[in-house]
Amino acid sequence: MAILQIGSHLMVDMKGKIVRMLLSLRKLVQRTVHSPRNKLRHCINSQVANPGQASHSTTEQHTSLLAHQGIPSNAFIVQNNQSKPWIVDSGASYHMTGDFNILNNFQPCTSHSRVRIADGSFSIVARRGSVHLTKDLLLSSVLYVPKLNCNLLSVSQLTRDLNCVTKFYSNLCDFQAVDSRKVIGSAEMHGGLYLLKENNLQNRQVHSSSCVPKSVTFASNSMSISNFNSMSVESQVMLWHYRLGHPNFAYVEKLFPYLFINKKANSYQCEICQVAKHTRHVYSSLQYKSSHPFSVIHSDIWGPSRVKNINGARWFVTFIDDHTRTTWTFLMKEKSETATIFHSFHSMISTQFQSKIQVLKTDNAKDCFNSILDSYLSKHGIIHISSCVDTPQQNGVAERKNRHLLEVARATMFTNNVPKHFWGEAILTATYLINRMPSRVLKFQTPRHVLINAYPLLFF
Image (cartoon, rainbow, N blue to C red; front, side, top):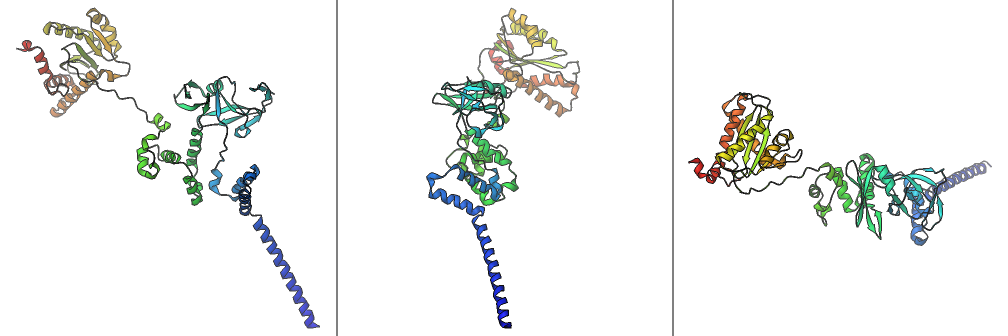
């Protein structure tokens, strides 16, 4: 009996262990079947088995399972559904859309407004929201009209909200900001309609990934590399161009030559680089054309000097003959002496060289040349050509001559330790030397030599 009792206890004990093992195995099977990975696999298998019956709910389950798994890189992937293009409409009073999914920050419309559709029927305005097309194009107060089967971009509302102008061309339409003159959007002609480009939106989505923290983006190296490789070559080039501080695309080609196998670096353009790096157009230098001595005179005023000359002068004015490049320099205590000095210079040219000044080219110094000399120049038939405002390049001959005079004068004073209050005499000495030095413009002849050849009897 004792042995039977012990055996019965052993059998009961074994039965309990078996039951507990079966329960544990059942829980393990349930966890395996209902795990997110197996659910995702089930969804994929069902799509492969029935490709024509893949519904929108299956896609939602797929996306929710990926989010449930907690892959960091997938948190920054936005599903890009094929949305309808935006039609530029100059007759629409508001932006309107029939796609509710593209609206952000939407609110119910309580005004019970109605919109007449092209077929003549009316449709209520259900909601109002905003749509972010590009980084520069943010459409606010977009009306959601359920019966509308297209997206309308109102020209009047866009120009009011973004303070821009709309320029229509034969094959495209540009939106340009009034303040910065930057093109913030562009639409192309397709089938008689101006359709807003969507490449800017795609570039913006690609470039925005650069602001993702590095620790998050590269949490899964394999996932990040696969996402990067799935980009187009143009998107990868622009992404590295943005990350490296907008360098020249030729430098990007040196760093990543495999991205430029089928495309040259000069085929890429960055609008931000054009705005940030633009410079003033370089003025082309005019070629020297020999004419007649004193037919054209270039003139410019320099000063005031912080140190007065020994005779009290603070200014000097130069007159350069365009044909011989001979220079005459006069020191002045005040700028108002310019008219008197030009009268004396004109008389000297008329008397000594028996020649007439036909054209006087100066800068835009209205206080000297324009207001004082206008009547005198008109009386003697001299044409006055002045440069535009803040454009000294147009008076380049006189500007370069002043620079040459100052360079020679400073070098002479530094060599001989001349005090600063003798700067006027140093300028006159520089004028004397330059008139006797070979000039590249004159094919290495001296200005004095060219002047003597023009008037040989005057110097002998």
